[in-house]
Image (tube, rainbow, N blue to C red; front, side):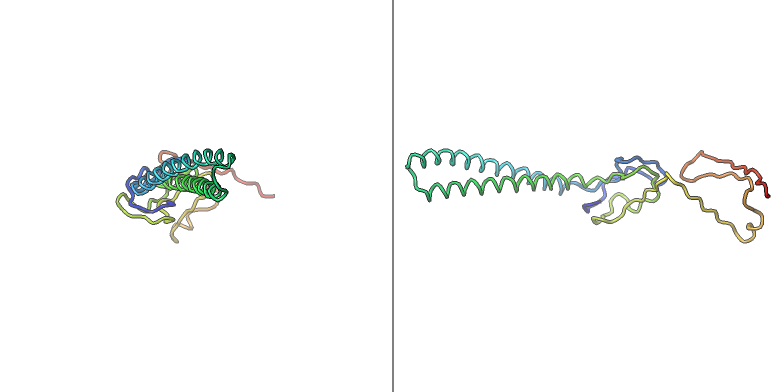
Length: 183
């Protein structure tokens, strides 16, 4: 997660196949939703201030052209408009950040693969940047075989074998090696 919080949903289990973009976990989004709502309100307020500053500037430009107001009053009005515009742009950026953070409350798979381990459960609190799940990239498979010392002498390279996979239930491969010719 790029944001911390209490885990509210776990959508996957170990051994399950996932695709890129699939939801894995979600944390409590209440704080992020409130921040986004506050940012939307700030943007609305900044928009209203900008609209008022625009209409005031338009009126003052006409009055200034007719020499009805001073240069100082015109400068103050332009400054008020510039300030309102800057506050509006800042509010837009704050809303964008808040909505972006809201999107970080759901963790999605960054690639296709198989869920190896889930490190957290629903109800636990996770900090931003803490790993919560491992996804095994199964596009290239490695096979590790463990033999006891007693078993070691019973097997040799090239022997026929059957291989099963914990991550791919129901899949069984049988390998029969062709003898190689020595010259």
